[in-house]
Image 1 (spheres, helix red, strand yellow):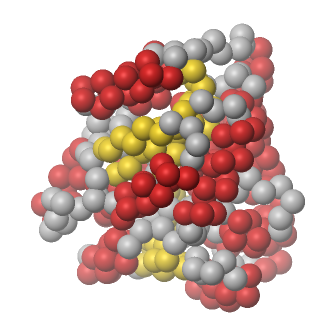
Image 2: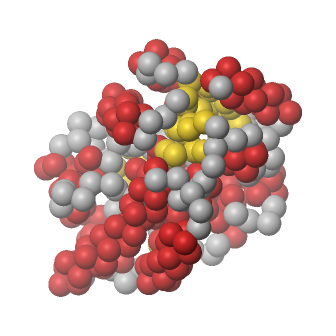
Length: 322
Ligand code: SF4
């Protein structure tokens, strides 16, 4: 089957079932006209005051003619349950996946067992697939380290890490492209910058934010959630990786990771991106209050370029830190 995924889900059972995963977020945001994806969902009945990512996922599911859509109904977004209901209404097969609230290994094993049954995963192929996925993730981790070493830009980091959710639907192709990129990046001069910032929160709906930051002398050395998509836990087995993965769980798990990386990557300030109408906005204050470096919260609604007001806020933040 060609399966759409609404966010990062365990990839190994999908590939071991000989299915091809496609991250619907990436289809939506890299399409020629993402705004049209949002409007189409509104025409079909989605409320104006709901998250644009969900509307984009809906249109990507409809237009992509997938055999099924896998949606995370605990651990990502409360809107996904309604999205899956709507897709079912439109005749699309849906497969729910749940990250256990308490990060219990036993519950995760049970969930993966039923996930593999639904997907018809071949258990004999599983160890080979685990190795294959791990190999590709190791390449993505190298790109992440090269960002810390000032050899890879924040946008490039975002691109290679965000695509670890589905490895472009073809692990070998991802590996080839990423290895070629590493070889080129190793030969380049180190990046020059005035300020090291970290980016936290869901990936941006703004299409030019990294470019804008780079033009203002900022090196983004940390993309929190995108890095988490790459399961950066080399010493854990494949199941534990999905338990250590911070994004589906409590903000305190995320904060531990963010604080470690602020220290390790020598980050001077944080940009916290929040999406309009997203439940995750509620914990913005907890994040701001828990970090001991300056945090600028910016909000995006519809896909497109940064608006002038947000640009001015980012510029003032940069001026304050320099
Ligand atoms: S940005 Fe928030 S509301 Fe929108 S899909 Fe992601 S988690 Fe859900």
